[in-house]
Image (tube, rainbow, N blue to C red):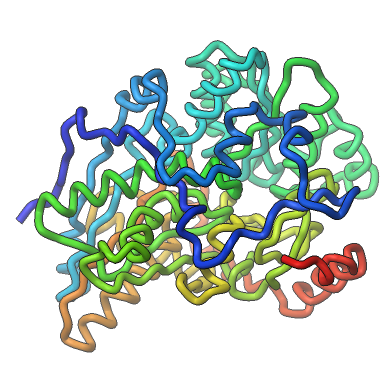
Length: 461
């Protein structure tokens, strides 16, 4: 019985998996809000390098990973797959639980899988600086890590409430030569406008995205970099699932259910899409299920509506068809800052809409209960985001016990919580709030969205 399943360095994947050719129906295209037509690729060149735009819309199933990127991946990849024997014993479950440990990367999460790739492609096209947003700080840390390795400058707009909750994340970014500022900030026209209205604005990912994009489009040799949601980001993350398949195959296992947390969708897509590929191509050994988890404080997949919306608060991005709470939605200040986003990845949303992927929402206290149990039985302290997946894993394992059935559960340990200890201090002191975002607030936000974009309902997608 193996507790840690490793791969040889030479088994590091040579290609990323692109889900677009295998979706159950064509993905609704990004819409240019000015023309109300599918956006032209050249318009995206104001903020993205050409190769990432090509990957975003590619119909190629396999995208080769550049040698330069694979060489940096070798710093921490392939990552280990663990069997959670301690958790299994504590739950007295017949289920076998496995987790892909992405906390092994230098920034401590799955995020550098795409950050390194994005920095590389921008460097190849002569870009000198990247701007971005970050919620909990994991993405900002990862991009600072990637840009530093390739000699690029990096500017990070960090959601203000997370900036204050997680000072060590900011310090890590600065060690890797990034410029970090709380958002909303006085560095952009949009940020200054928001601060005039509310000097204590806690910020949101949508606001930070707006600031980062404004910074990019108003400066030469500067591009914007996104840590989730878009297809090119998700496909870079599939190294996780491709490795996990090999690791499970080496011990004769295949998952009955794959579970992950979702803020924008990149980590869960990265683990689950290679198994989805097996399912749609008839290669899966079982009728595998996929369960996405999110906070009740930001219930995008479970309470949002499936429609076109902006990816940011200032309405600067193209319109994406996704589950959304409305782009002006500002969620409560939960500690899982990476899950405080109003929308989700369009490919993942389509799979939820088609009933292929499930979605569940959990409150902050119950997920920290789950994370604490995991830490006590497995030793690793999870990031607050990861705790949402662990809660679903525990529920699945308990269900297997009640039914008396064996079940193989795979989940993504998206990052360690060693820089999130203030959240755990609040937890052990009993100060965490469960945070259920009021249904009427969600409806108010959706109403404003429909009033702002009444024409999107007539789009033929």
